[in-house]
Length: 354
Image (cartoon, rainbow, N blue to C red; front, side, top):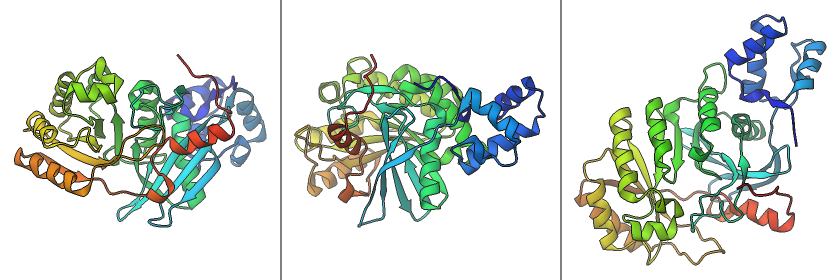
């Protein structure tokens, strides 16, 4: 266990206060912030414009979180890159780097594993080990950028874990990643996905951030959704959608509803009509996702005809819907599967949290 403090999770004001307590000028904070957030250094020794004495002093009390590439898979179809990163304590997380016309986007993890228990998701199979710090979430971006020698312009918090279950660290990450002295990724280029933790959606609403909120809905009613997603037993579909309407009204930001198309489960015409009625008139977009095959469950993706019929019905209610482009299909680019396979080979993960 690392008992030092994660310095990468400090904002500029906190770094200034830290150095002021040590009798050092504020400009040193800007230097350290740049090393951490622009260069993505892995050690204090790399901060060559700091004195050896200062570097040693920082090394004694702080650590810089970084990600080590354990496995890297590159799609032969579309150049999507899937990483399995190891952290300081031996735990692993996954990230996926995707190349679009507008640039590079990365899907990052916010937890080691996930406790939400969604039946169609591989990330939750081995439970949740721990939260990631803001610095560890940032380090996934730095590791991918430094490995590929590119600049990432878009971030999706849709990897392993439930971001709103790690609320404070994720909020700090959003602050740091959008800082114009750091990675400087616009909030409008960041998407945060949640399975529907209603109180945290309301808390997020109060922050008035310009990010895109993506809600993993996956069913139009409680009977189907509760069967697939245990979170629905606490906050049902109507309560969740009420929170979403409130969020849209407060932020004027369109919500993206993620909907995994699962054959024979949630892809019927009845489901489409039900969903259309519930979303009618809301500033929202439905992202239909042919479900990924996971060996631990029996779900299969809907066929093209069912998906097209589903879209046509939603359009009748004025609900915009598209099918998510599949990237990295030849490398199982959905998060959780690579970590699960690695755990079977080398069970290094720490004890699952309560």
